[in-house]
View 1 (cartoon, rainbow, N blue to C red):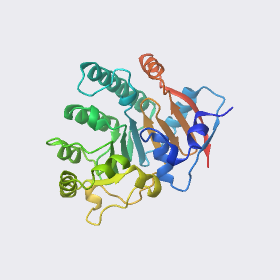
View 2: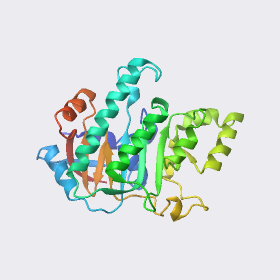
View 3: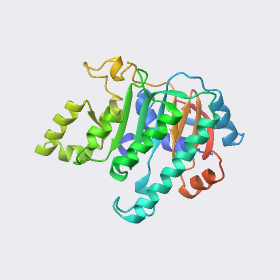
View 4: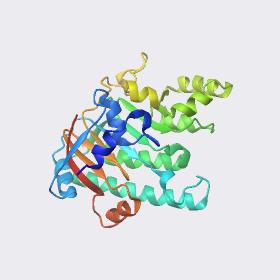
Length: 282
């Protein structure tokens, strides 16, 4: 029987629809592994994942947060009241999952990489962006020299007063831009002004195509350990949180429920929302 990981992992990059997810993120970081195949485990997924979490040491790890707001039934536009309530419900469940995961750990994990996927900037208010980072910092160690990269996924650049200064203040180092949207906008005068402003703040833009082909860029020459860039841009392990998120801990692989109703149900029952686990190979 073909697993979800086998199906997702064997897709070609050029035919991958929709925004970047945490499995594709991991594949891009590895670069040498265009596909991952998972051998499913026979024991219950939640039991297996709890065991993997409890065995983690405090070596730096990557964290990927999934924000699938474009797939929420009520989310037709960020400004609509129904969408705002749907986003709030999802954030509350994400924070609850974060606590469930942290309760399984022997000690708080130190983050080397932080990724926010699914264009959260378009859907979250500045207060909510701050809240997500605050909640993350309560469960994980995200300050100091160990955090090499903090990347936020954006479908297209937004022109909003104070947004990019806030993102930089929250600790983000890179903006992951949709390749097609950025190609359409890159030569516009306002985009050139944005690039100058990003450079002034210390934010580096990278397109999804560049990321998938080359991985993360090397830290800028003027970045130092004190600025949060510690060197190696390929994390050994990644923890994924949110609906449909993937975690890769050594050779252990875990996939959260992609269906929102199942994800919410598991969280409401104080259970980890992982739906399948296994061992991955190239």
